[in-house]
Image (tube, rainbow, N blue to C red; front, side, top):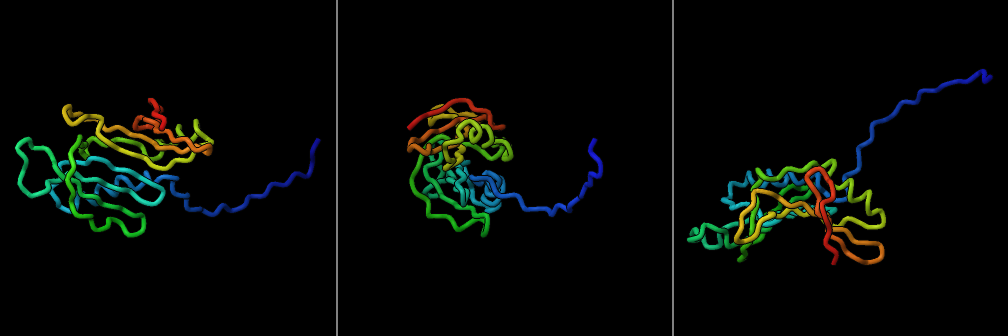
Length: 173
């Protein structure tokens, strides 16, 4: 038998966990910051998270007069940084398209990237994208989540995922 075995308990110092490869952890704070600006919004054309920031493309009205169809005709681009928060917006520019509301966003930042990163170990995530699942003519109350990946071999893949990161489908480019 083995005798004289000694055990040693070493104190474990708490470490800050590294941020995710794409700043999905900042999306909720970024949306909240834009909502707190008090600016009238029609929703969001797109929100995306990169390794460094969250970009928010807010649907707005270009001339301050509501359109007859009630749809937005402009986009205002905001950037939200981990250090520095919400930056001043760019001037509005003309845009149309389907939008989604903050109340429709429902994803788990701790799970959204996991399955894609596990299934595509030879690819690098470049962007996490939220858009409306609708079209200009057909409104939807569902947000579509995509993880943009770039292969070490040079190809690009857009992976559609559920709010908890399950893979739904892909588009290769």
